[in-house]
Structure formats: structure tokens, C-alpha cells
Image (cartoon, rainbow, N blue to C red; front, side, top):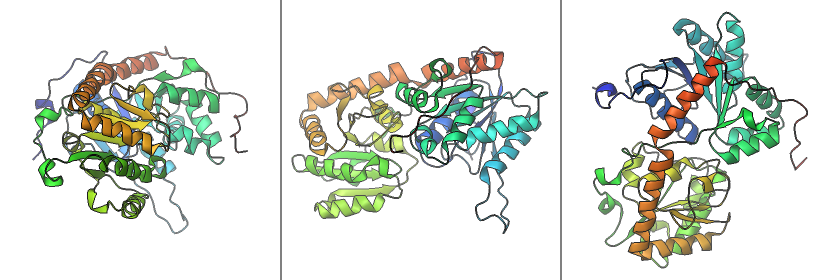
Length: 410
């Protein structure tokens, strides 16, 4: 039986009077869902009442926490609907929860369809219930999905009708300004965060002997295996590393490009050195075993898993794209390289793994940076202060106007 987490953690003092917050996110494995869930749990520990509203139980949410509730969106499946309208079902559930539990605000993560559904729910409530909407942009909702022809106008409309708008990196803020004509002052940058206690590698037993041979290094990659993660580049980079350093590659997660990883490993003749673990809940325990983290993505708006690796004292080899340079300090906590530069990334990895002193310096620097800049105790109060500003009317956002900037391919 799960104990109330209130007894496992000291209750921090809220920065302003407790409020009732509805949080909607994608509940599956991914950065936006992880951050939204962790945020809700931290807010509950600070005395706020949190209501998760989604089609499934968020994967990082325990079965019981004080002041935390889960409301499942019921999707009607009529023969008339080839594709059941989840966005409308979500709006109905948001409206019901906001009305019944007297929510003060809805905090939605990922613009589509969550921000649109929140606006519908707010309109349904009417002027007598001044429900505020805060939308947090996480990345592909702006850089990929939001710029699709069929979604651009509704994305623009939805973020324009939000009472508060945050982005997880300066990079994502610039992308939103450029493609959706949002004024710079309308977007608050609040980065993702990490719990240094959970990602302290010293508190976990070493599991290397169950995965590695004697003297081998553990190289790890964690993702949802989508094309943007460039899974073949993960394997190619590792191939370059293991030719000089005895090592094995551990792949954590699952997704459409998982077969690509196996195919590339077989093509390069290193399939026996690649271990697929699939989806895992205990990411911190796995990172505690790791010697190097690979993130050769084509695009990352922040790179939460890179931050989690750094908090675990794992040097990161990543691409110099999007918001990653705001997290990984090149030459200090790891190394950055251009997209597709697998030879360069492999050389950087070899340099770290061969030099124990060099590795320790990068490991220490990564954990120090994660604690000083991205600790949960630093970032969550920033959300609290932003909520206070939104609820008090201090955030006066303008509406996006004018035609959308056309995509370069048009």
C-alpha cells in the first residue's frame, strides 16, 4: 500500500495562498508529460490542490498523493465517429471539473489540443466563473505540429486566448515569436526542472554487472524513438566509441524507430553490444549506472533527459540544436556537435571515457549546473509566482494579430 507522500517529504511553504489547479498533459512517456506531472506533484507538496485531467493516468503519477486528483476523460465511441473527438470530450471534462471543484486556473501542457479545449471549457463556464488558462509550450507543438497547415491557425488562436503563456527555453520562445507573431513580453520562459535528490547516483546500487562485462563502459540513450531523435545516429556514434573503448549501449524507451536501431546495429556488426530495455519507470536508477549519455537529436526544445543525465553526474554528448545549448555547457558538462556529426560525437565520447580525471570533472560540473540552475526548488516557485500574476491580472497579454508567417517550404 502506498503511503501518502506528505509523510515522505517536508511540506515547503507556498509562495502565495493555495489555489486549485487543473493540469492537462499527454500522460504517456515524453518530456512534456513528465514535467507536467512532476510540477503537479510539487505544487501539491506546497499546499495547492491539483487536478490532473487526461485520457489516462500520467505515467509518473503515483497512485495516491495528498491534494492530487485524477479525472479521466471519457471518450464516447459512436459508429458515426471514425475518429472520436477527444478535444471536445476533454473540454467537457475540464468544464465539469472546473465547475464542480471550483478551479482557479487550468494549466495545459502542449498547445494542441489542450489549449483549445481549455478555451472551450472557459467559454462554457461563462463570465461568472473567471477561470484562467496558462499554456506551457514544450516544443513540437510549436516547431512541428503547430506549423502544419491544418493546425497553424488553431494553434495561433489557442495560444492567443491563453491568459498566461510560458515556454521551456529561450529557443522555443523565439520560435513562437517568429511563427505565431506573439509579442516577446507575452511569453515567460520557465525552464524544465529536476529533483537533485532523486537523481543522486550515490543513493542507488550499481547495476553494471547485470548489463556489462568486466571493464566495459555503459553508454545510454533514453527517448521515445521518434524520427527527430535520429536513432541511427545514436548507434553510429556508439559504434565509433566502442571501436576504441570497451562499452555497451543501453537503449531505454520505445517508439516507431526502435527497429531502425536494431537494423543499424546489425549492419555495423555490433548488435551483441546493444541492449534494448524498453520503457522503464526507474530512469534515475539506470542513469546512476551510466558513464555517457547520447542525444544526437535533429531538434530539441529543451532536452529534459539531458538535464536528468547531468543531475545524475553523466556527461552528455548531444547536438548543438534548439534549446540543448541552454542545458549542456559545451566542453564543461559534455560536448555539442552538429546534427549528423557522429564521428565528432564519438571522438568526444572516447576522450571522456578514456580519461578518468576528465570524466569526473564533466560529471561534477553537470550535477552542479543541474542543481544551481534547474533544481525543482528553484523552478517550481517561478511557476507559483507566475500563477499569482495571472490570477491577479498582472499578466496583460496582447492577442496575436496579422497573417501567419508562411513556412519556408511554401
